[in-house]
Image 1 (cartoon, rainbow, N blue to C red):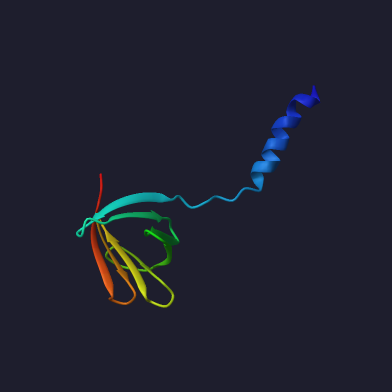
Image 2: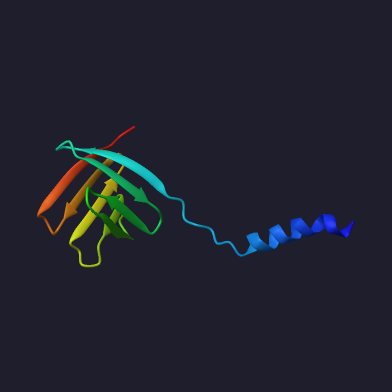
Amino acid sequence: MIRKGLPVLALAALMGGCTEMPATRQIHYRCDNGYALHVELDEEQARVHLDERTLVLPRRPDMQGERYVSDDRQQLFLRKGDQAVLAVSAGHGMLRCTELP
C-alpha cells in the first residue's frame, strides 16, 4: 500500500526544484517602411529579431511605457500601447512600428 504514494512523492520532489520562468510575450509589428518586426518580451528583457541577428536589450525603468536599452546605449526599443520604436546604432536607423492584431 505504501508503494502507491511513491510516484506522487517522487513527482513532488522533482517539481520542488523547479524555478518559475518569466512569462514571455511574442509580439509582431509592421513598421512604417513595411518591415516586419518580431519581438519577445519578458519582465527582464526584449529580444528583437532582425533579419540577420537578434538584439537582447535589458529592460530599463520608464514611467510612460516599456523601455529596453543596450548597455552601450546603441540600441533602444520603446513600446507604449500598440506602438513601438526601434533605434539602432545611436540614431543611424529608426523604425516606427504598429503591433499587428
